[in-house]
Amino acid sequence: MTTSNLRRAALATIGALALACTTPSALAQDIKERNLKFAFSLAKDHPLGQGAQKFADLVAQKSGGKIKVTLFANAVLGSDTQNLSAVRGGTLDFASMATGLLAGIDKQFMVFDFPFLFDSPQEAYGLADGPVGTRLQAGLAAHGIVGMGIWDLGFRNMTNSKRPIARHEDLQGLKLRVIASPIYLDMFNTLGANPVPMTFGEVYGALESKAIDGQDNPVGVIESAKFAEVQKYLSLTRHVYTGMPVLMSKKTWDGMSEAERKLITDAANEAKQEERRIAQAKEAESITNLRKTMQVNDVAPAELARLRQKVQPVVDKFAKEVGEPLMTQVNAELARMRGAGNK
Image 1 (tube, rainbow, N blue to C red):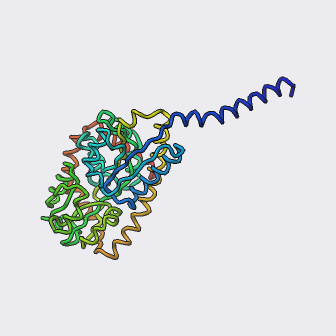
Image 2: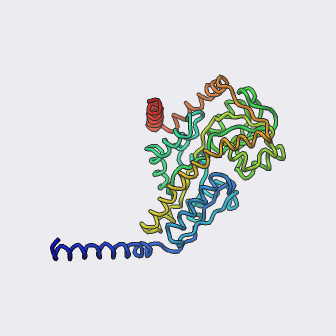
Image 3: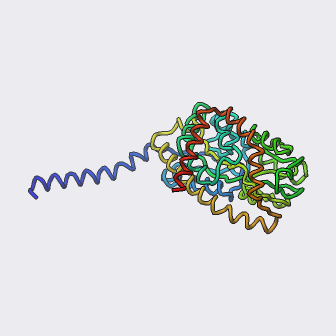
């Protein structure tokens, strides 16, 4: 190598080192000291709470400790509806709640709550992370919200204090708490139950006082909320899958630099994968634990088929409400995933 070439190589090395040294500090100047709040209704030890903690840890790590995310579990800042309003208004930075609760501001989110839509969590993840979920989350910007991904609550199952639910006739007359979403009300009415809309924070007390007979939730929620203390029967119906969108206030987002937005987005994506992993591992463990304190029954495939057939009119009704273009896309995505899985 000639002297001039050596000089050029040396200068290039020095330049690269200088860039490596200055880039973090330059980025650091774009990251401000911030104290952000993340509220949700579930317990802190629930997989969603663990995912939220992972998110908070990642944000602190990626921001060099400048951005702190404080978690507020167990609905201590208010109900899901109140948290949604606070995020939209900019007085709360992050919240997470069931997809059904977003139907009030965008009815297309109801599609995630269609009975028996998904055969597996992987199908739900695929729809949430693909074009359908991406488009629905992007539409939240018009409502003052930035969608940060859809986390996993799991498949819902029914508990009650009266009897095991082995067929749809067993639901007759049961007073069941439901999410305040039209599709849940119609679904349980169609099955012959008496649905009662209620915020999650009120459910334990209502079960304990016998104001309601039962409720439906994924087993991880049933365990962490200690519903076994006030419910005798758990029936593994897996009738609806519930995703949990993580919502960020657009006001908070708009006030951030590009560097801050990137680290928040990266942290949310990493935490989503971790939360889903924890949720999947926890489901089998929760069922094992609940069998020790509740009478747990599976539902025969033939009876699940009867349940599916019974609620088909509900699916048909709400498919019209969310619109044919979205339903066509959803069905095409599910068909594609099922086809790929069979290869």
